[in-house]
Image 1 (spheres, rainbow, N blue to C red):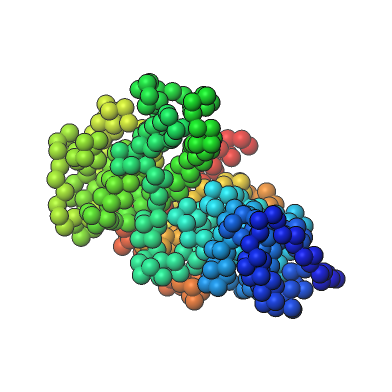
Image 2 (image 1 turned 60 degrees about the horizontal axis):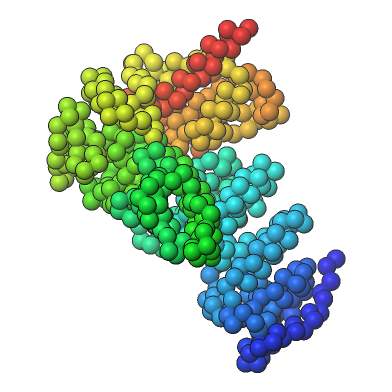
Length: 533
């Protein structure tokens, strides 16, 4: 049983401010005695290291009070009084103390009863350090600590930084744990509601520029010397020494004339920038791959703000083929050019209609001739697409592919046997959720959920057990409405509830074709399995 310990009085440093010391004593008196006992496990040296803004006067009880106030919170709620207190303290010492507190909790087993450590840690930790929490959340998921990972995801989003939101968005799609995904999605939805916008609008809004100017340039300052980083179309950085105008491979070591502190800071900034670029590109690639499937549109001004005014997203825009749509029908395809104009597959300049909606064009809508023309144009310009848009397999659905009496089940996969690794691998790659689990860990479906269209597509099978390695025999693929938070999923043990299946011929063509192209990977796996026998 943990025992309360009395804190030794902090020794005032030379030059300490008596008024601040008195304020810290007042905060000690404000700490709730019961909560003080609950946080007695925290090593005293963590609190003792905190200072007032003057950098000299100890403020151990300020952080003790703040932590005690957060400790019993069930969710990450901002506490204005605590924020006001921390604003009077030395920021660096507070951040170091919260990091030490978090690492102490983590190293001693991350007791779920003490998980509120995460609330002040996530609120006040710099984003470059906080991003490491994403890996920890995945580690907790792998260790079957879903409840803790879910709570951490909510705290992560509460940080409010754009990169934190992007990380939580990735977790909401890739977590592989329903509880965690639901918590991450809920946190993002609350953030969007607080701003009075939709989730998709929030995710557009938070794509950072990472301090690049409109031309994709950013300056790193050594004092007497400056260096320019220019974002390339492949998201790499080209560095130039502005004092000589010559390109360089990396920032140099500071010379005798440079400001060493500025130079060290610049080198650290560049290192962080490369990590941030990688995180943003990964996040936005995932989002655009989804858009290619479901056709989520933008109004012209919103598209320009996201894909033209943001230099990172402009790298995506110039290599992808876009479609202008009217009432959901494709009018014309175009590409964004470096000079700000738009170009058609015929290499002619194009003017966007004012009322058009814009989305990624899909090969099944473009047709073979236009798709081939775009492939040739990209080859001529030596452009490599950030997502394999023009390589998407087009699968037209035939009437005899559908079993009307089986709730419109698509039967093209029936009878094919695939390794369990093919099922789990496909589910992980495309962020699919496993269906209900039966006796002895058997499971019968994986589902692809699309929140924009409000649709779900599931592939069903018979045979595998979780982790058992047994092959599964494919059954039907089904399309149905995405279940809401209070709606029961119609998928059961390999079958769909009567009347729940939707006729895929009535659904968006690109969505159905995209889903079938995903599920068709299982046919390839079945063929490979047969060849190996």
